[in-house]
Length: 277
Image (cartoon, rainbow, N blue to C red; front, side):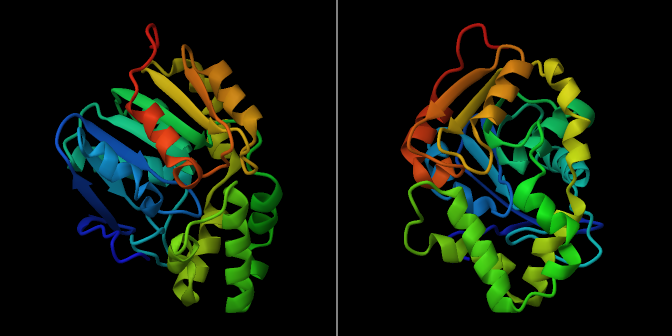
């Protein structure tokens, strides 16, 4: 992990420690990462937002700098419940929430099923509905016991290939290594496949029929060249969430934070469209 990205604060839970950090002053905003990433993905966005906002970042339990251990529940359901507890710990009644990848499913579950309240919601190439749990995800989930026994070099090659598939323009020097760092070694390798064992399509199937109940201003920002969650997933969310905005970023893949950080920041700092709920 890049030593310049450090989460110094800890939140204790029965399933382990969650590491977090905050910076800046102003209206609060919380950034959620996805899989197989960590809060490091917000390394350029968080400092820029902190010029005018109070920014909270954290690593999901079992990811990044947060604790990894064999008996953890790292399902979307558990992460959503934990997110609600974190908001209470931070004393944030109605923050803005920006969520990427499975962080979107966590944010939506917290909002629609766990009683969280947001000022507004931005979904960035986010899991929220449709048959996302297929392909690579399903292959590993169905064969996790096999993948867990891969030699370390084969495991790292697999994770690195998946991460490269997430970007359209390629990683800057050092970035891929920082993404890989938490998943190295016996503990990291076990944690990587634990997430696939724990996360299920049913957890978003439960939320998808409720998307029409999202009653906060919602913005969807999507890389046009996303190969992990292609454009139809953005269109599904746009159709299901009342009044949601949809913004495309051309020449960018699943990780807008890497491929087009300036364009993403422009959307994140813009006012919501008039009439957006």
